Length: 250
Image: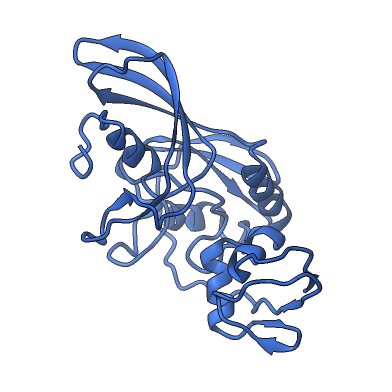
């Protein structure tokens, strides 16, 4: 894929994640690290800043064969057609394999239920996965059954025409009926297993509104503009109203 750059001063990984459908920023960094991206005929590092007129060549490697074991699983399918699946994920189910949890994930169950009928854009560990929710969060997840559907869904997430809305019970009573938390999120400076609001983090925006009020607690509905790890949990704790039962940020 050849891209003509019309943007000045963007980090190359940010530019690629914006211009290549379905490519995340971390995915772009992987391509850069493995020499799959050149700028004006020369390899570049992830901190390269683009210049107007740059000719950027992206050579995406062929998808690796899956090494994840299909696992029989009772998946609750809320909707399905030839392009997408909508799964109602229960609390306690991890979405995709990762270090420390390589089996019994939603991906293992999807591979057993649908085999090769999943998009390959997100690579070996995340076939069909367009977005994710935390292990202890329940709710609907959209799964792409082909690369075109994955590309369209990823574009809709990026331009916010596909909305993600969550509900939670938070500690304390919020004074206002609605509000917005606009605070960057990155790795916690001293605990790498946690996220935190930090000046070095990536942009994160959460809109919230009150659904119901109880003695000492508030039922809120949150809509995300961005999808940072633990975003709602971090943002609600940041404004002094952590999610009830959250043992990490509460």
